[in-house]
Amino acid sequence: MSLGHGTLDLREDPDGTLSVQVTRQDTYPVNIGPGELDTLPALTEQLGLADSLFVITDTNVADVLLQRTVDLFRDRGMRVQPIVVPAGEASKSWPVLQSVIDALLTRGVQRRSALVALGGGVIVDAVGFVASVVMRGLPYINVPTSLVAQLDAAIGGKTGIDYNGSKNLLGGFYHPAAVLIDPELLRTLPAREIRGGLAEAVKVGILHPPLFTKLENLSSGSPPDIEALAAVTSDAARYKMHLLKDDPFERSLVRLLNLGHSFGHALEAATRFEVYRHGEAIAVGIALATMMSRHRGMCAAETTDRILACLRRCGLGVTMPPSLMTATWEEIDVIRRIRNGVLNEVLPVSVGECVVVDEVSHDEFVSAAGALAGPGTAAAPRATAGRQ
Ligand SMILES: NC(=O)c1ccc[n+]([C@@H]2O[C@H](COP(=O)([O-])OP(=O)(O)OC[C@H]3O[C@@H](n4cnc5c(N)ncnc54)[C@H](O)[C@@H]3O)[C@@H](O)[C@H]2O)c1
Ligand SMILES: [Zn+2]
Image (cartoon, rainbow, N blue to C red):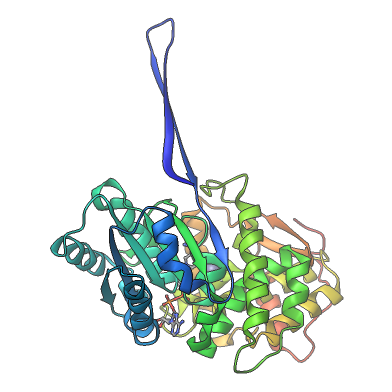
């Protein structure tokens, strides 16, 4: 296992121009399974990271998991220093980042230190960011505790904080030294957070039929079926990696994993990020994209019904309140402007296939939202059928 190892090649062209070619290689384990948290101290030793350890978590996760985590290390004769930040998206911010860095410096962080991110996507994103900038990069281990973090945020190496009102504006790619996914940790996660995570799983499932089938068969309600969620996480995490293979730094704007995200993000923004959890908005976004695809004649009524039924089975709403239509479309315009005038919306064709289309019209948006709000969901194709 190696982290941040690399090579540097220097070439001098006949005209005297120097070219530098740097390659960085990160290799790390992603361990998924019930009880994995118990292996954390041994894993830090194996990775040579046990000298000076900081566990960074939020107040909610601290309540349910911090003592247990500290005890696991203590039982092995090891010490970890906890740093706790307030729970919530507001912690993905410059002031909180600074407070974490100050706490690390006050408590003697060194180049040999390692960080453990114990929490949801907020903690994972923020700790990855801190790790990437302190002393030009400290190793960190992701121990995701929310479903969103387990199946999405903790893998892929994306770090970030929100800045100046923009989500994830600051950040970069900085991979962890290990990812330890313990589905048992989801037992204390509020049901609404589970549903939010399932929306991201449905998104991946629409691209990957075996996962979709698992989601269709998920038993709803509480307590959550941890075994089923573990299988969902394992599939979603693996397939996300598969999709990132050709574009690990996500340079392309044409990304299938954006399914439901332009509309969903616009809905979140239209409600100032105060009404919908991210996954709830993404569920509406997926439903809109599916209905638009149906209206274009690109996907069959059975596919539309299947996707909408799966979202509902996961406890997710699929309708957009009429009062939010105008504000949401305005936010879609903002997204389009940020992307230099092209929306690049992902539309499902079938379970297992999606296509990226350049644009969707306001009329299509209104019709899709109307059809989702109406009594019959899989409305007939409209005149725009077949356009891409
Ligand atoms: N880096 C990426 O690739 C990526 C991918 C998806 C999402 N994200 C980011 O992740 C964030 C959303 O993640 P999230 O939904 O996990 O939010 P979150 O971290 O705020 O967690 C949701 C809530 O659940 C609580 N919680 C977490 N684990 C718990 C547990 N085991 N028991 C009880 N409570 C628990 C948290 O305290 C919080 O209140 C967003 O900021 C998003 O931008 C990043
Ligand atoms: Zn998302």
